[in-house]
Structure formats: C-alpha cells, structure tokens
Image (tube, rainbow, N blue to C red):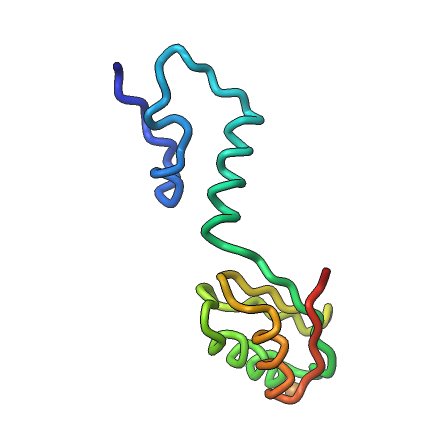
Length: 112
Ligand SMILES: [Cu+2]
C-alpha cells in the first residue's frame, strides 16, 4: 500500500481520512468533512456567550482575562465589544464561564 500524502493540516494528521485509507477507497468531500467535523468537535467545543455591560476596551480586557482564567479554556477568548459577545474554545463548563464574567462585573448568558 502506497503511503498517502499528508493533508497538510498538522492538527488533523491523526484524524485525516487520507492517512491509512486503502488506495481503492475514494473519499467523498462529504465523508471527509464529516470526519473532520467529528474530530474537531471531540477536541474543541466553541462556547458563545452574550455579555452585557461592556462599554470600553478595559471592559473587553477584563472579560477576556476572566474567561481565560476559567479551567478548560484552551485558546485566548474572543470578546467583541460592539456585539456584546464572547467566544471561548475548549472544554470549559459554560456555567463557570458565565460565573467568571459575572464575577468581573458584567451580565452574561450562554448563547443557545
Ligand atoms: Cu470599560
């Protein structure tokens, strides 16, 4: 069996359908997308929060730091002042994220 080319996405190497697939198998775009989505959702979960009360960049910084300090948050949180929104990646407990934002002095709720 010929060794397949790597897909080029290092974070997907272990889950890449091109690796270890028999030469005779032709992967459809759908099956690849499904496999990638599955592996992504397993590793990382995106949690979106609605944050109320932010009025300036200091608020954004305070909320960002509060979210980053929650256990399970893997990447730097994205906090949007204009939209009153925050995005967090990782395996953090949504309730803990809301509690952290509230502790920083802002109203927060998980976006469904
Ligand atoms: Cu502020």
